[in-house]
Amino acid sequence: MRKNWLNGLFHPAVVWDESYDGNSDFCGIMLTHREPNGQFDNIPMAVNHFENEHEIVFSNSHFVNQLFVKFQSWGAFELVGRLTEEGIEFIENNLNTNSFPMEFIQYKQLVTG
Image (cartoon, rainbow, N blue to C red; front, side):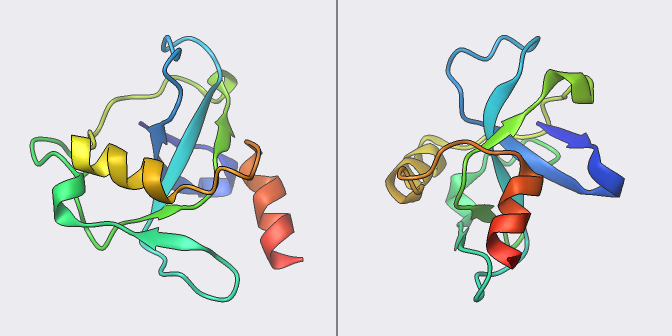
């Protein structure tokens, strides 16, 4: 799913909420091309983590190691890709489970000080 929201910031998001009904806020994981560095703990993904029959496929993809709150008020989201079972398992095994879901603005303030 993806949404263009905060000042043109645009990233695909993986729905990480089994109860998401398409009409409510949800927890999601942001995908990015940014490699890990001193500020961001982004985790590199692999080709076999993405289904190929969609708009969003592997393209030097990383996931941001943080759960984010995605708000329904941002507008309608659309399905543009899917993870494979291997991709879901990879995120489950690597996601920081010691953090709580937050808004991206909070995350950016946290990592940039």
